[in-house]
Image (cartoon, rainbow, N blue to C red; front, side, top):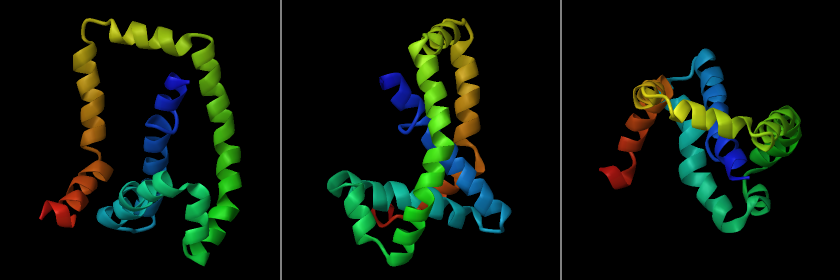
Length: 142
């Protein structure tokens, strides 16, 4: 389950969901900072700590009526879209393919160099560059 979590809601799916929403907002004319704020900043800084402390049921009950309605209406389509991906992910973990891939890729002599290229691409993506700017504006960083 640890491998599913890392590849799923802990990191892989989270980055994929952030990127998908960010890209849609940018394509619709939102600025990088606005797209980042509406995608990542509010969730990571404002909402996730409240969900961790109080539960998702509390968050649904405590948010605005527009947020409630939208979340209630859209949670099922997201569940329906994501469930097959999670089922495939679990299958790949269960049959050993994810472990084999990790071992194979991590054993290559140039692994660190290739990893750094992938991490640099993520680090220097427009979304996370906007994130550095937005995080710099937080009161605790001034």
